[in-house]
Image (cartoon, rainbow, N blue to C red; front, side, top):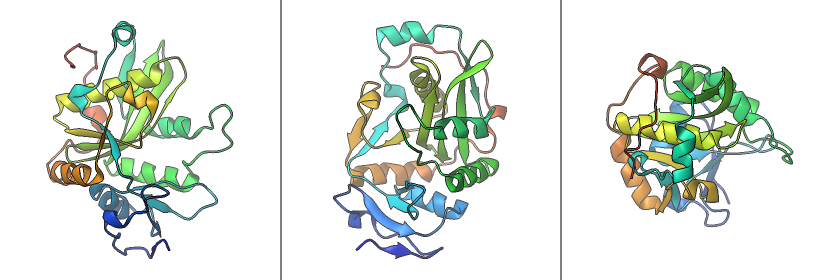
Length: 237
């Protein structure tokens, strides 16, 4: 039976997560900032539907991208050289709303109103960040997630035009690499992310990497204040 957590109760060891469904660890608790930060530091994240209680996951293996090793194809190199405008933390709430909007053929979203409130609070506290992609003054893509130390935990991304989510992810990897982040957590495998250089790590190794990276000091507060215009440069392998 899945453990049911009261608010403030510690998470079970990630090794106790279910094999099927892969990574289901616990239910309950809350989405308070201290709960979320402790979860991410242990390699755990919330993911549930509106009709469900809060569910906590730690899948094995874990999909990650090392920022300097993001793969950029020749076609994407040409795409990246188009006149995009890339910003950080300019409109976090709007990026979350865009990510939460149902896709064509999708009945609903896992980004519930409760989740939106929680991550907006995390943003106000300086833990959650967004990267925005603009074209001709229009917001056409973006990504948001949680930063702890030198680890970034990607939550969701969206696109309004072809390749805009790839532009967002590659631009985020560039910024993370420049600021010495060691890992971008992508949670679970997808064919789309594998084409960008994502790899699967055994959960044990992932948790070891995360423990070391989250213990480091990282950029704090509003990243908009730290940002200079991001222009893609082909220094990735």
